Image 1: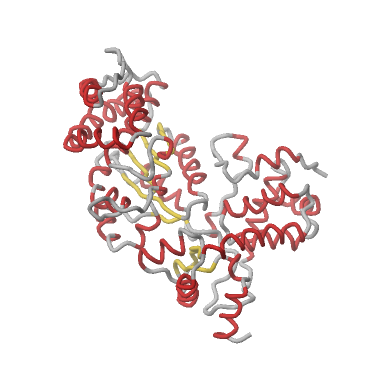
Image 2: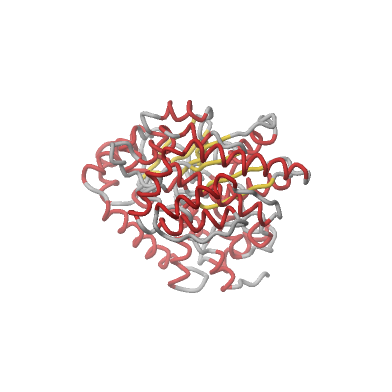
Length: 449
């Protein structure tokens, strides 16, 4: 029987770690949930780039709950595209941007920096003609010396400017006022001096093209700009045309709230594509009315069991892992309880597992898991107001979320989760809340026992 390596298991359960699918060590932990999520979204993104583009730039949008596995899936996309001969630049925009205050120029400069840095690492020289002049003018504007030699690499110049302004709202405001009227010129220069040049050089090296994956833009705050538009609406609807004009394949993550916005039609029209949503892994079969005893969706539950067991025994064959449940849990029912209460939310499942590890060594007892569940439930209940409970009951009845307010209140707060089956998308209550006295009383009074 395989032995559990506790330290390795502890590291594998870290909910903050994203699996980098191209990395052999991480690859062994990856579970493909496409069969229960309604469609293979990553395959659709890949096909658009490799088969449907006709060698023309494509721009695609990707969204879902924070923590549902988007970054892991985007690394899978990166890995598959690289195998097909593409040069892929993946980056987390939150590393470059202040997500509470983002403008279009910030995103364009972040992309330019990441692409130029990747080209430099690939020994492809980029001559920053327009940008050299821009850097000089910006350093004078900010009255902050930004030392750049005439041979300075583009990525270094942009990095120095963004480093000066990221933590200073005053400098950032000054820079934006200067850059805003020049956005079209900056976009044109990024295309001509960087992206077109990069594509030509990459194709000389028998690469099929350049793909940029901009992750974490879904974390942009929903706060309003001074003129009333929210940041997501401003960036992706009002200015989406410019984000689309980059002359390479681009995949942007976008905030889930945009899927429920009155501007959704304009968003799709701007980009010419329907955004792809990554739903949760279903743990129960959709019921036409709320019930206290939902039926397990066995395929989804089976994949979640495999996810947990793989973190503990990555080198063991799939069928053999089931025999190792006693090394992790006191009973198979405790494992099922963990999977069921996670609601099919990847990060929540790992958070619950990680909390169990913080309390005791495996095999985890039912009592340990229930203590962890109670802690997470208490945290959720503490945040729900009476009005939000009423909103939650309405969504449970209709299995639909409508409008930005409901999305912001219920989805971002993780009070409800989104799933997909043959009949389309539907929304279910977070299982942690389904066992509260408030919810059980409502179900009993409205639907009987």
